Image 1 (cartoon, rainbow, N blue to C red):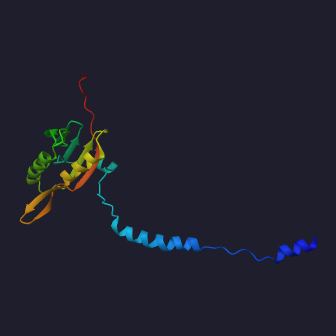
Image 2: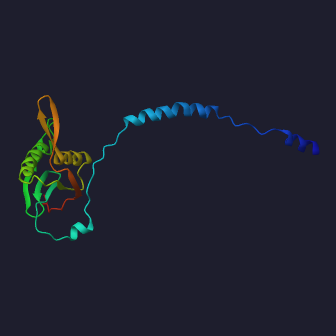
Length: 173
């Protein structure tokens, strides 16, 4: 019995072969470093309402509200109510789309009346697509200016707050 015990003790521990793992790292690390340069995330800074902003009672000022509903976009002042309504327009593929060009044109006129105003509140119904929300945000934030040989973006209302649209009672069919 003792001879078996001695034979077990005399064996050297097995070496760990990490060559395959090192080959994987040699390929994977440069690949990740190269692709990291090309992946960018666009971040839009949003201003969410705070409890303090709700409790402040100030004199009525112009406060732009853009309410996006399934069938229309309403532009208004938080204090004065709805100023303009944009119904859906037919798109090039035959489906109805929100009138973003009309919205931008109207917001240019509003910006002319209130040039120092930078904030807008975007209120959305719960079933609005994310793509529509981003398109409306882009239309509220900036508009395209054509100069000879190039396109530039001009600022409208870049400070956007997001919330839920007020529910309206719809007539039953």
